[in-house]
Length: 161
Image 1 (cartoon, one colour):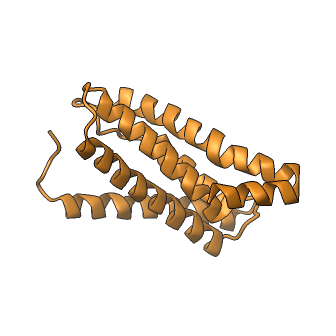
Image 2 (cartoon, rainbow, N blue to C red; image 1 turned 90 degrees about the vertical axis):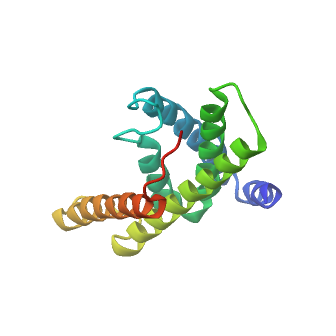
């Protein structure tokens, strides 16, 4: 898959190459840095945080760059969750599998959120009208509340220990 993007970048010139650097370099790095800050500020035992900026970064990237940003979100989430799992000085196949599942869900969340915003608001948009701005804010908040309630309903009374 990377070979396809590299070939496209070579054909299209610098703008495509810059987009690849953003998707596979800057996006995962921003995801990891802000995610680690969020986990550092999390309530004990350390994996429940009130605000998780990487989720917004992933949705914003999908809104601006489209589906092409989803692999970058996956990569950032995967590395962040491996780092969080290794913080207890163990790295097993269970940790890797869990990190992959969380990364998949994070990428899916970002992709669906970005696609929803693109479909309803449109891209590119300046968000300069009250209508567009309110739609953006309402859809973002409603989507995150729905996902949070859905994940709580799915997990039920089980907790991570």
